[in-house]
Image 1 (cartoon, one colour):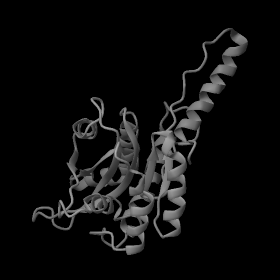
Image 2 (image 1 turned 90 degrees about the vertical axis):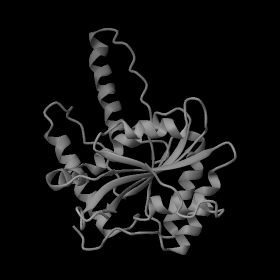
Image 3 (image 1 turned 90 degrees about the horizontal axis):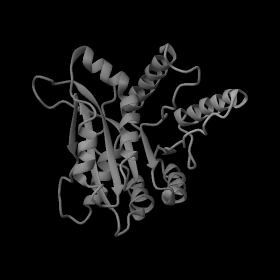
Image 4 (image 1 turned 180 degrees about the vertical axis):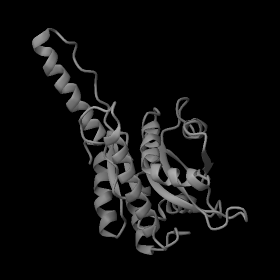
Length: 259
């Protein structure tokens, strides 16, 4: 792994301005936001496995968030947390941070989002990310900066690359897996996931502007594949199966309207 340590904060004033202008500006009075981080504070071989699996864990959590009614879009960032206790001094734990924009309702709240993230993996330590100085008028920006602070960090980027390789190899070695390409693993540690298609064009444009300002991220939209049509006869059976295989290929590769 790279000798560079994970970042403690986002330092680029240009990127901060760009995030305010192109991401935070999308949040209107009908939306709320909340930030959480899931960290795997494990040791020894379990720590190696958690690092190798972090890309797959992120994809799983992204899909769970996508399926919550009312989530509009979210920023998903693989990151890392340095241990602070004497027992774990020197350890760096893999983590995934989220900045989630949603429309509050009985089906979508801070508590519901937390439960979805917290109940997925018993080894994950899920906590809410709060501003260090609440009430300073810029709290929303501060927590977003915290989520994405490792967007171009060498240590985190190398962890993502190794985890992608590990995840793809596991897929290829799975005897029960259909003979189609492995799922798409984001090349960057940070991505913006479009859930509500209304945000698609704006987020696609935001990504281009953010990239021009030096921010590294991808845009992803998870598309729900409708059920295939019922099989009518033997002649259509093979065609239907081919279509289903193609649909699984599209979904696993992560293709979407706003890729």
